[in-house]
Amino acid sequence: MPKKAFWLIFLYTALFILGVNTGDLTQLHHLGTTICLACVGVG
Amino acid sequence: MNRFRWLIQTLVALGTNSYLLFPFGGSVIYQGPLKAVCHPGLNCYSCPGALLSCPVGAFQNFMASLRFGMGGIPNFGAIVLGYVGFIGSVVGRLTCGWICPFGFIQDLLHKLPTRKFSLWKPLRWTKYGFLVVMVVIMPVLLVDKTGLGHPWFCKLVCPAGTLEGALPLLALKPSLWGGVGFYFWNKLTILILILGAVICISRFFCRVICPLGAFYSLFSRISLVQLEFVEGNCVECGACVRKCPTGVVPNQEFDSPECIMCLRCVDACHFSALDFGIRRPLGKPAKVKRVTSPL
Image 1 (tube, rainbow over the protein chains, first blue to last red):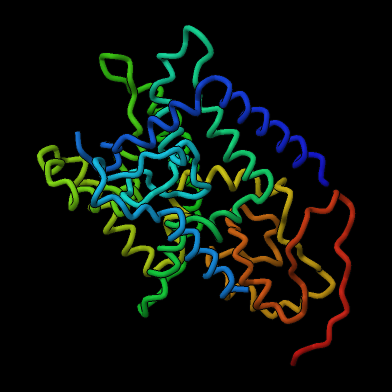
Image 2: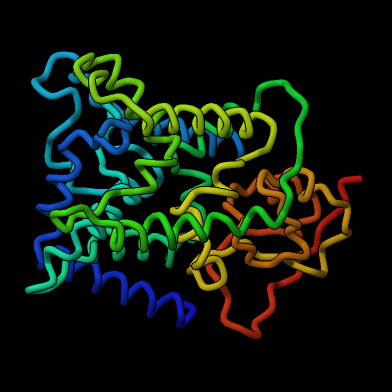
């Protein structure tokens, strides 16, 4: 396995876990379940 | 291989937009637990059928509310960055070619029988501008009185949001028409222009505008998998170049950031000069395979 790819996979996995542990999951769920008015072009 | 890719694209596009209860539920969009997961491709989370969140929209919203988290650990969207970074590190832009629903829509539209044009190559750099300026800088810096920013790419440009989110939602929820103004008409105009461009220029949006494609392309030289070129087998017939939907010259531009790994070039090559697999360590050349000329 190429070293750079391995380290990047490790780094981004750690970042993902950090996000899960800092409450990003709840915020992401909240974002996804609210109609995005910016996407609709309203407001 | 190309038929298999079409099948995967169809299954992913339909599968990840398969919430069919939107006309009957209280809200017109899916609100279940899957919305805490991002789609690997560009797919508006305000699409009534969408089961997953959009990574570009979610990341902008994290950036937009960055100032609120400054007291403790700032929520800079580590979950989204980690998710798309992981995908990029493993497969690079393969997601664009195989998984992205908006890429699939572009592939379908480009099949319309019209005159086709090639892209002016310097335009390929603009997608990095959209990524840096509209997805990162503007949501952080352009804030309202409360200190909250806006997802500017979604608000000003995103044609996937207009096509998959705005138009169906306005049809399903007529009350939204009350707020329609400049932003909607601006985005509708952009959508029409982009769809027109996509019909004539293959994968125009992916090559010129898409911030997610720009992010994934940063991994093209280091991702775990790669498109491999076996120099000894190449007869420079140009078959791969003619098939490439993003205008890459596979036998000259190795690990091109524009390559979406659709593998049409691998299919087109009758001399086994192109292959797809795990990246080799530097200095370890690809094995030359003995092939019988099909000519």
